Image (cartoon, rainbow, N blue to C red):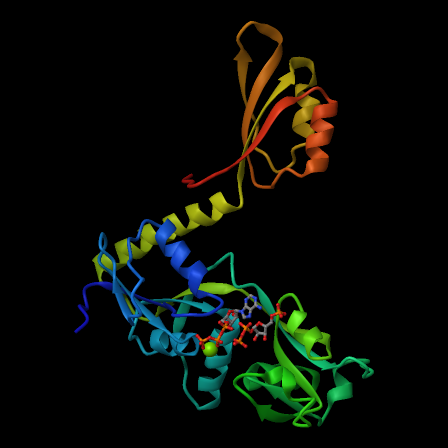
Length: 299
Ligand SMILES: Nc1ncnc2c1ncn2[C@@H]1O[C@H](COP(=O)(O)OP(=O)(O)OP(=O)(O)O)[C@@H](O)[C@H]1O
Ligand SMILES: O=P(O)(O)OC[C@H]1O[C@H](OP(=O)(O)OP(=O)(O)O)[C@H](O)[C@@H]1O
Ligand SMILES: [Mg+2]
């Protein structure tokens, strides 16, 4: 029996979001042992239980208040919200934060040799998808209709199998479409993973824990997006060097022992330093340029 005083977080058991969901929680300092093929994992060092489920089940578990938090793709979340609304329900939950993984788009695709001049081409046509409500919302907004062919997997084979004229499926690199002789013709929704919370008040203890987790998640994501940059540079080129580093804070400037003409610069940058910029820095006389990953940040 689950202990109701512990914060429950649902994440995908195995799939596109599972490694990064686990990595995020681990980086937030939650010690979880997910080695065994178990549905529930108990954190060793915090009052947190992790439920590992099919991603399709996560929005419902949060909306029904079975878990407190969930990590889910916006595409699956929005489809479930629209499904429940279509059934006359008024689903409640809040999105705490957009995360930095699980990026993909829900797109319309057609056989590579077909002509596409806009969504009107697909008016009244049959479209295979696992996201009928998101697709309907898009078609409704254009004043168009379509016949739905609902498939929960292998959507990309539908046109070849003669089941549909087009498909509406998730795309990231486009390799799956290409391998199936299809061409992406329109993007209808852009998605990332999000952290969601059930409606209703949490107990004070749970709320305090969620607040701490949110600060840590912010720190983890910000650290992943930032770099620590160090270099030695000629003192008289300081401003020109700073101008080459737009995403960086004002640097810390340190003297170099025994060399009055040069300085050591240290700074955090929200952008990575490209080779081209490093070459320009070197041309200005900078040397010993180091770009280091940052593990954690707290402002
Ligand atoms: N190619 C992709 N690149 C990045 N993210 C993706 C990609 N495809 C899907 N996603 C995101 O990851 C989520 C999970 O995708 P996955 O393919 O693992 O789902 P699934 O097969 O439905 O898994 P489950 O067995 O849990 O139901 C998607 O809903 C989407 O938000
Ligand atoms: O544009 P691409 O980079 O090729 O990615 C798109 C594919 O990725 C997802 O499936 P996944 O590989 O997760 O397998 P699944 O169909 O078993 O969910 C998605 O459903 C597409 O089929
Ligand atoms: Mg699924």
